[in-house]
Figure 1 (cartoon, rainbow, N blue to C red):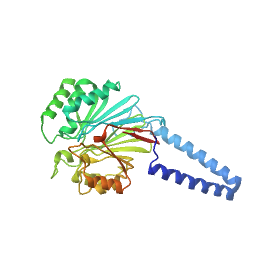
Figure 2: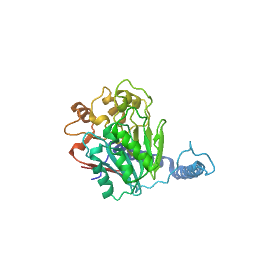
Figure 3: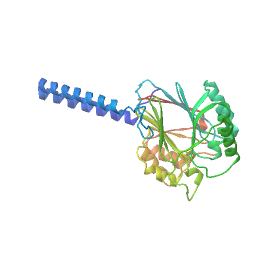
Figure 4: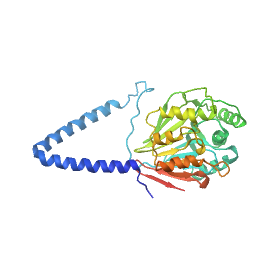
Length: 321
């Protein structure tokens, strides 16, 4: 069932008020003013068209800092599958012709991720994003690299060593791939779906350096978006609270729903309608976090209850579990 978010309701109310205002204005001003408004609107449209044409980058120009202009397609669908992996992250984001994976769960459950991708007919993963190097995020990465063609690999800086990391790096070498360590805000598009990657702002955290080094990713389609907050803890959350444009329809709650001193501030700042928590029966989410989400009117889903499938279009959200 497609669900209407708080933002969509607000947009509709605003549109109704504006329509009433315009009817009153037309009645008072007469046909002459209507013609003037139509002329002004035509001139504005022509100006916007010219500006848009100028914004399209030339193939002869350095595109490293250019804005990417894409054609709107209101029918594009993004499906996000949040896999049941216990207290571990594994997300598959798919459009008709594009696949992105954000984190790969534990090595011991990698076959489950590979099986899911195979069932979906996936042969290529366009982007593999590893938010940080804990085993519950990088554990299955070598299996993905071994089993599928992989385009780009984005990750954060390596703050630790482990067998999982060694296997991942060996798989990269065997596949002839190199990772991109994101140190500045980066973005890419898949049709109308935009991805923005926010890297950690420090390379030294007082506590939980691996978790706090998490990449945070915002994925947007039209007026809907999902923020993947990795395992951000207090220091990293503080950075996010100072980052603009993180408001999102859906929040992947950081660190498997464990409470941080500023969790409530993050929820209020992102202002989601829905939340996803990757938790397990033996490593469960904190009740205080569930209470914070409930108090803010957020509908929450837990992966420990099963796979979660989110279907986004430019103006609708459908969540099934």
